[in-house]
Structures are given as C-alpha cells and as structure tokens.
Image (cartoon, rainbow, N blue to C red; front, top):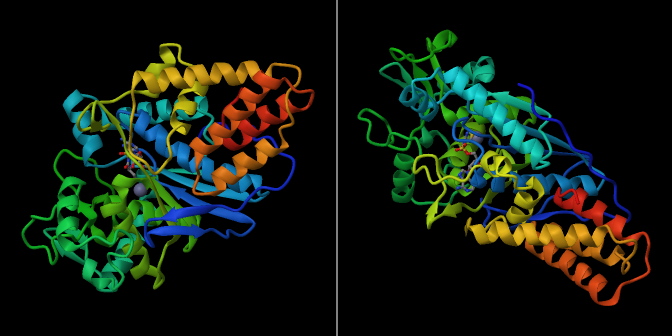
Length: 409
Ligand code: 5CA
Ligand code: ZN
C-alpha cells in the first residue's frame, strides 16, 4: 500500500538528545541506543471508524519518537500495518451492507488524509494484512513444524506454552490474561484448545467470508498477532528499537507477537522497547469503535478546526496518561495556537536557543510533550512582557515547534 506524503522536518541548530522511554516489558524508563537507522513498528488501524482522536493521540506519540531521533541526525525506518481483514471489519461491513474491501479502502484513504493534515510522518512501508499473507503462511507453517502450533477443526492455534518467555511483555497473571483475551478478540472458551489463551494463527475459510490460499494450511485468513510479526520481521528484522501502540494492545496483541517471534527466532525481545500510549476517553468512557463514542479528526476538520490545533490538543497530554477529550481541551489548544502564531509573526523576541534545548530535554525524557508546550508558553509570555531584540528568535521557535512537535505555525 502507499502511505501518505511527508511534511518537511527542518534541521535545528545544536545537538539533539537521545531518547529515554518507558518500556512496558521492563516497567521502567530505558535509554534507547539506536544505530544510525532507528527502527520502529507501530500497529496501524483496523480500517473502520477511523480516525478518531484516540487513534490520533497514539500516532502522535510515535511521531514524536521519530522527531527526537531525526533531531539526533539518525535516519528512521518506520513500518506500520493496516489490519485490512479481521472479524470486526467484516462484521461492520456486514452490518452496514457494504463490501468489506470498499470499507477498508475508503477508511484507509481517510486515515491517510487525517495523518497528512496532522503532519504525522509517514511509514516507509505501509502494509496491509492481505498483502502480507504470502509472508504469513510460511511463518505459521514453521510454528506448526516446530510443534508450537496445533490444529483445531481446521483452524491453527499458537500454543503459548511453547514459549518459556510468555508473559514477559505484559507481566499479567493468567486470570487477568484470560479476561483481556475474551475482551480483545481471543476465544478463551472455545472447547478443545490446549490453553484458553492460545491465539489463532490461521483461520480456516468460513462460508461467506473472504479466504486465501494458505498452502499446506488450507484456505483461510491470518490471525491478528502473526500479521504484525510477519510484517515487522520482514521489514525490520528482530531486535528493532520500538514497537508501539495504545495500551489496549499490551495484552494480548504485543504479548502474543513477542511470543510468536521468540519461538520463530529463538530471541527475545522482538522490540527493545514496548511503548504504549494511554487511552483517550469521551464522556467518561474509552473512545472505542465498539461503544461508538467517537470524535473524528475528519469531522473536526470539516467543521473548520485547524489540524494544528488538534495536534496541540493531543500534545497537551502526556502520551502515557489516560485522558478525556472535551470541548475545553480543543478551545485551549485553539487559543494556544493563536498565541504562538502571533508570537512567531513578530519581528523579534527574546533569544530562543535555550527554548530549543528545553523542548529537546522534555521530549527526550519519555516524550514529555506537556513540558515542551509549557516551555514554549514561557518564551511567548517573555516576549509579551519584555519584548526582546533577537531578530532570529521567532524563526528559531517556529522551526523548533515544527521539527520537534509537528506543528506548523
Ligand atoms: N489494527 C490493530 C493494531 S494491529 C488495531 O488495534 N487497530 S485499531 O484501529 O483498533 O487501533 C489503532 C491504534 O489506535 C492502536 O494502537 C490502538 O491501541 C489505538 N487506540 C484505539 N483506541 C484508542 C483510544 N481510545 N485512545 C488511544 N489510542 C487508541
Ligand atoms: Zn499490530
């Protein structure tokens, strides 16, 4: 699939800072030490009901990771998937009486538009589950041949007991895992499974549903976790720097992915850091497609909201916290954008080199975007109060906000 166009990232004076980030697997902040090409995989959308503010908040977090790396003069290799065939997508297409392929294409197109408007950097590879099938089938065959997968009425399951490291990403106990598995696409109560947590790797063709040739697996379609593993290993290889997603992906998705990869390669972990964004809520409940309490980026844009204000609203919350979308959040962001734009359009201001360092320092410390915004607010307030005679400063501020925060002033 094609991704979306990249916005320019201005180069900044001085030296970028290395990122420390919270890793779910170890439960602490870890220094990342990527090579000259930093590698990141971010779980993409299941293309229906996109792009809501929760999605946008999660992609904003991983956009910041890349901006910090780019500022250290590294290159970034970024891969993202699109889960363009899965139960919830098929169910939605069926409910609405539309073709599932058309639904996925239309929603993926809308997502690209939203990402472009929000100035999110595009992945170098943007890969759909369907196009990944030729790479998924041999992995499932290898897992089966290694004794880590078994068949149940034509479906192929992964055996979590084949991986001694199973549980290391989420650190959850079996009871908690079982609850989450039932909530998030698993089938712990299906009779005949070796372990209730075992996830499906390959689902045999069902009447009236799409299916593909799976070689020795028979016709069917891929499971969710192996999709991301196949795409990540194909394009990034083991031991890449960050795997990202929202906190609802910690279990089962990222746990199972790490486990598949561990059995396939004998290595753990697949990603050096498992990074998770908090959940955005609306009216007190997690914004989710199943509940339907959604605020869409495209709807806000149609209503005339500047995408830069949407982005500032996201940045006003630490990526790891759960937070609530309200009208006030948006109004505050619109007001801040207005103040910042007015400030950088003035002919001069107080020197801005220290501000660039403050933004760098805030982001390098587990992506503390709210601290970065506060630093810019302070510079703007000083310019208001004291003026300042540095004619280069407004340009430096504008470029730093663009390069490090993705906001065009
Ligand atoms: N296709 C899979 C990942 S392989 C998937 O989870 N798709 S999704 O469309 O449901 O979600 C896309 C991304 O948005 C995921 O990283 C998910 O964790 C994140 N996300 C979903 N809802 C929210 C929310 N309310 N707040 C923050 N992030 C969210
Ligand atoms: Zn994924």
